Image (cartoon, rainbow, N blue to C red; front, top):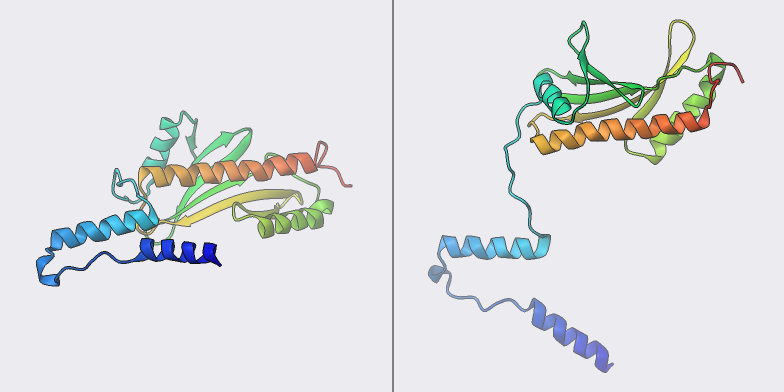
Length: 194
């Protein structure tokens, strides 16, 4: 029982509020500093933003690719794309204000239509166990199954360069993880019926 009382006394001493002075004697600056100190102590500090969020544009995405020494292209529709580890990724902007960033990748191989059910099961398992990327399968006009990864983020209020970089790397790295899992599950020749 003595240990508990000692702990309770220490807790009361730590959580006891500081003596309060007359409110009229505390100026706004001091009050602001006290609240800031309390927030830093309770929540931890945060680095000041180096730049305010700005709208995402194809030019910013292309600049990010160049800064990271990634090769990219612009297709006939004006969409940015590139190959990462032999896999095709596109970077789309959707929405009325082009505020939704989507990083969409496609696996570099196709599967036989007879494997559709097992690929759909794999995509459902992936989506149930992970946040990113969304995984889905499409059947092309030629009857072949093609698997897609997708990471989409609403950036209505823009993004800093650091935030944009994190989102783009997230789309590429998690898409690559999905495609690595597919490579492991379906060694060549995956295009033949089971």
